[in-house]
Structures are given as C-alpha cells and as structure tokens.
Amino acid sequence: MKSGIVFKIVANLAILALLFVTFGAGVGDLQPQSVLAAAGDDPSPPAEIVKLIFIHHSCGENWLQDDYGRLGVALAHNNYFVSDTNYGWGPDSIGDRTDIYNWPEWFTGPDSQRYLSALYAESGQNSSYTRLPNDPGGENQVVMFKSCYPNSELEGSPNDGPDPNEGMTVGHAKFVYNQLLTYFITRPDKLFVVITAPPVQDRGYADNARAFTTWLMQDWLRENNYPYPNVAVFDFYNVLTHADNHHHFVNGQVEWITDHGNNTLRYPSDDNHPSIKGSRKATEEFLPLLNVFYHRWRGGGALPPAPPTEGPAEVVPTMPGEEIQPTLPPGQLQAGGLIDDLEGDAPAETDGWQTNLDESTPTRVDCGPERGLAHGGSQALHIDYEIAANSWANCGLFYWSTRDWRPAQGISLFVHASQSGQTFDVTVFGGSPDALETYQFKVEITPAMVEGWVRLEYPWSELRRVEWEANPGAPFDPARAAGFAIGFDTFPDTPNVGELWVDDVQLIGMGAPPQVEIEATEAPEEEPEEEPEVEEPEEEEQEDENGGFSLPCMSPAAFLALVAILYFWAKKKIY
Image (cartoon, rainbow, N blue to C red; front, side, top):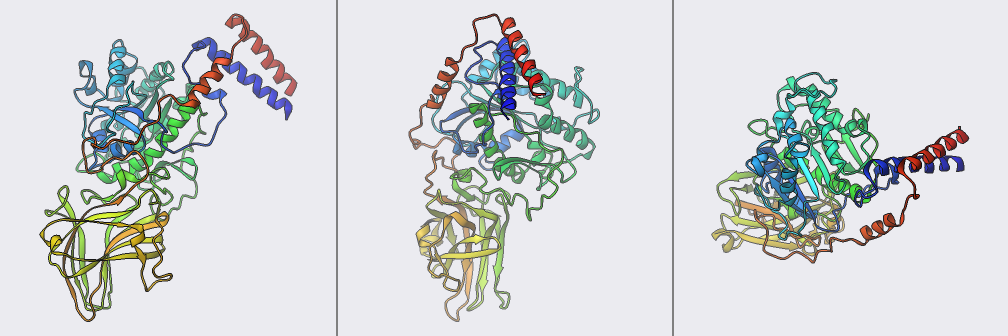
C-alpha cells in the first residue's frame, strides 16, 4: 500500500513538471485536472454572480425566451448574469457565423483576438429573456456556444477521423473541435461549454450526427489529453432525440442515456427547431449540469469517467425523467416559481391538464389551454363544467414524481368566472403520484371575478387535508408536492354549472435568491439581495497555497530529468 502511494506521488510530480515546463508557472488560479483529487460533484448554484455569454442563433434564442425554453430565467435563478450574441453581432458581424466550420474564426483565426475581446466584454442582450437586473462588472467568465440544427446534417461516415479539408463532414467537425483546444488550454480562467447542435427530423443524417456527438462526449478531450476542467459538453442533441434520452445530474452523478429513439428530433415545432416542450426539457437537465461544470472548474476537479457508449442496461423509469427531482438544484424553483402560464406545451414532467370526475353521475367537465380570454399572454386554462347534484370533478396538473416546494410559502393564481355565487376549490396534492393526498381551500366566486381577473394567493397553512381522507385538517407539506387542481362540488341537492378561466399559476414567497419576476421580459425593477464579493476566501486560500509552492532552483530540463529518474525508480521498486 505504501509503495503504491509513493508511486502515485512521484507520477503526479512528473505530470506537474511537464505542465510547468509547457505552460509556465503562472497559468492563472487553476491547477491541471490530473493533479487534483476528485471530489463529489456539486449541482448547487454559484455563491457569487457569474457572468455568462451565450453564442447562438434561432434555436438558442427560443431556448432563452421566457415563453419558450425558459433558459434565461432559469440561469438567473442559478446566479448567472446572462448576455448573448445573435445574428449581426460583433466586429465584422461575426455573430452571423456559428456553424462548426466557423468556430476557428472565433477562437484561433487571425482576427480572433478582436472577436474574443468583444465577446468577453459583451454585457448586452440580443434576445428577449429575463435576467438578473445588475451587471456585476468584469468580463464574461463562462462562454457557451452552439451551432444550429443544420450542423447535425453531417456528411461522411460515423467512424471518420479528423480531416483538415473543409466541409460539413464528421471528419472536419472533429478536426475543428481539436483545433479549438489549442486556444482553450491558454485560457484556464474561462469556462467553455459546448452545446451540441440539435438533431433534425431527417433520418439520413442520424448515424453521423450521433457518432459526432458521442465523440464529443466520450473521446474529444481524452484523445487530446486535455488537462484542465475549463471545457465541458452538454449533449443538447441527445436530450432532444427521445423522452427517455438524458444528459443530466441525478442521484449524485452525471447520467448520459442514449439508447432510445432513432437519433432524430423527437420534439419538432413546425420544422427542425426544437419545440417548447423539448427546449424546457433541455433547460431542466442543463442547469444542474452547468453548476457541476462550474464547480469542477472553480475547484479544479478531475474529469469524470467516460460515459458509457449506451445507456445503462436497466433504465426503466415508468415515465421520462421520473428520477429528476427536483428539476433544478435543491432549494431552487423552476422559472421563478411558475407552475404554468398556459402559453405553451405541457409543463415539464407532466402530461398536461387532465379531468377527473364522478363517472357514476352525468357530471361533465372540459378543460384545457384556450386562446382568447387571458390574464397574461394569449391563453388561459378554460374550464367548462356541469357538476351534477352531490357530485364532483376537477381539472388538474399532476407531476410524474414529487417536487420540493419548500422554498415557496404558498401558491397564487389569477381567476375569471362567468357568474358569481358559486364555489370552487383550490387544490394541491401531496404524497406521491401513486398515493395522492388532497389539500384544499374553498373559494366563493365574487362579482369582482366576473367583472375581470382577480389574483388569489394562499399560504401553505391555509391548504388543509380534506375530511374524507386520513388525517383530515392536517397542513400541506410542500416538501412532497405532487400536483395542483381546480376542483368543483355542489351545494346539497343542487347542481353547479358555469365557466372558469385560470391563468399564471405560480408559487409565491420564495426564499431562494435571486428574485426574478417570471412575467417580465426585461430585468425586474426590484433590487436583488446583497451579493457576495467576487473575491471568495477559497480563492484567496488557493492562491496562497499555490503561491507557497515553489519548484527547485534549477533549469526545467534538469528538473524534468530528476523527476523522470524518480518516476522510473519508483516504478521499478513497485513492479
């Protein structure tokens, strides 16, 4: 055991010496991955506000927007101050060019220094999304970049090696990304996050696209012996190929499941742009991973093990994403606490709004998002109901797995009704999807609700277990939330007939900073909580530690020779 430890120490010294000679002693405040001990990954948001720039075109713009993919507001809730580039951005309109074969122009070409200076300094928005209100200053620290879906239409063969000949081919794509590493290794002070291009619907390119993204995930950094944790890949492509394909952080580890579907776009809109549902799925899976990438980078963590070529042998969640709970790191709420604004597809991890009713009676209820009458946006939940005397029904949204709503203090919604004098129930469900517990507050429809929209707000303490279930009157436990519904019953021997519109259902009173107003498309006016200083004590300690480490006073060549002798001496002693 002792000899093995000695060998590891000497081997690590040899690696450190090589990096010292190659890159010099002052490569910033980041150590090479290979000499740092691996630690548990951390999916929590950064403690300080981090500046992030996203290079993208239309798919990325959709992904960022509050009423589409909600990436922007999710990034804000995870303490990232987000800026972006788009068509027409930057010197020489470099923002127009984001295909794979364009990336060398950005990072390694003759004018790259000019483009990158503008990129690192950019603090504006070139798309519409909610972001943190105050720029913390300084350069962008995280650079995300993505090519659009035509870049999944790669020619060539899946097993082609890197090819310097230009073209939209598997081989040239590999060549380009290898070249990018020659720049990334010079900037360990920046975190570069590759977002793989989304898939297309045409199966003719599926094998090549899958082969290339698999290469990025498994082989790119390893084939190049890349030493730093400042480069990461999010497999946007894979997440969009099937509901059961994932790239996410779950159960304390990164999981990459690829063995479902035909490697084509599972979530199309009218064309190859990912739909709202697909974009929101990507947001949920990406945020915890981005935080993991960030903490690896700041902490100098080692590269994770290579993901398997295929998904685990037994991936049998009963529904897609069943184990992703909560969708953002513990203590965070998706999209500012929004449950549903009724503007797009079904909320993530649900099957959309569903009706439940007493089928032994002529009770009828129809519900679903409908254009026209709405509080915000263009749609609201329209419920048309005829509840037979002494019967019941509800219109509900049920999650595939329980959620943690503890960062919030209650729930709010906007309602509008066709007539007053009747009642409905605001209902939340706890327990689990297989054993729901019902908690309600009965609401009387007032004339104000008929005249216009009224906001209703209920703290958890007002939502109590119904009398026909166990523990009647018990308060709702927000740590085990399973769904939300609007319910209807009747006065004795009297039917209940009418229409109700519901909009902008969301959680309220969240304690997790920063606070971002989800309905806004611009930065909110309220000031965020006091932000921590950018200079963290941990960084100072790391700098002190690095500063206290000194190499022998000899030439690099002499030191390398000494280390090599020690290395082979240790190896001989052990073997």
